[in-house]
Length: 319
Image (tube, rainbow, N blue to C red; front, top):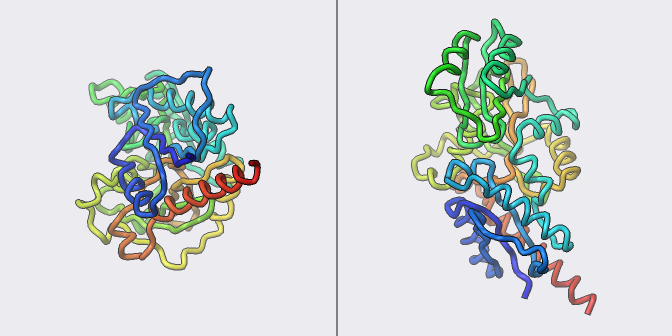
């Protein structure tokens, strides 16, 4: 019997979806890809395959989970299975460089960014930001990996030469303009089925001094494991959210086959929007949802259920 397969490497981030699948009485199977094998001589089972693989898997001891997931997703796609957030999406998830290039392709402004490999090259790149505040972050990121704010090139040099320097898992460090929000908040736009679902305003006044690209800080705050410690006011679903950027986001999602994602942006003092993260392993804040009356995991489970039903109908038609 066809079912929904959830591909991931972190049970804490998946249990909320599983509860919703069970609530809707949908058949599912959990594929935890921290390790495993792929028999290329066999056909995969029938069903709907949803990937929740994360760029930060290596921080949980699952260094090669994204690579294994890439092999599994390619295998599924080769056999014509329906894969939601497939191999192309995973390529974007694990590389902010590719995210920014794709965003710019669709006319979506990103903070000026330079990618560098090697300590000497990082310091050379920093000269381009001389006299301005700038941040560093990891290319394969999440959880605030490598996010640091610098007031000067000398401060960066001191950091790079210290024991505190974090070596990126893929070797690529990003240097980026520091965009300041006068109201100290960022906005995260959630998409399910490739369509806008809701936007969340996230207060950064207590912990986003490294904004604009605190993808990890946002990830941590959206992480289900930390929800009970989050003040309700920190996350607020925006009523009647309207920004023209949503249309461009949806165009990008369609072009890349991205069905589920959270996209984050910040506004500077002049009202210019800078988009700095596409998170295809998105989570939702329970307190904000309870206050706003919208539930991401329930909507996601329903979407997966509709995809499964459509598959079943197609299978019946071919019998």
